[in-house]
Image (cartoon, rainbow, N blue to C red; front, side, top):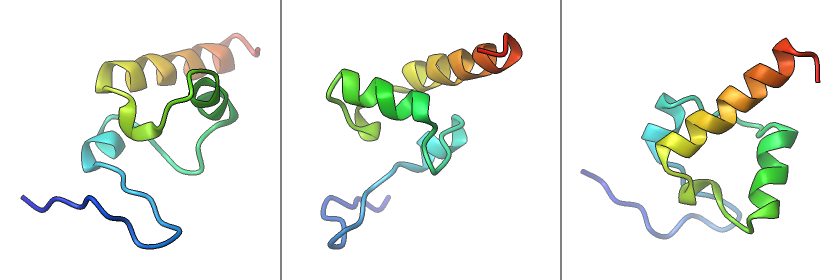
Length: 65
């Protein structure tokens, strides 16, 4: 298993599992606001939290919020 702990200048590190659980770029405004509100980074979100955020986004779209 490869481990990357030093991104290139101007780069970021994202785990493959994050993409497998639904993370996409560019981040939606909702995800960005949640990360800012909790002063967190994408890498700090566990899969269950990512799934909950994606469910929130889907629910908002369905309810036209």
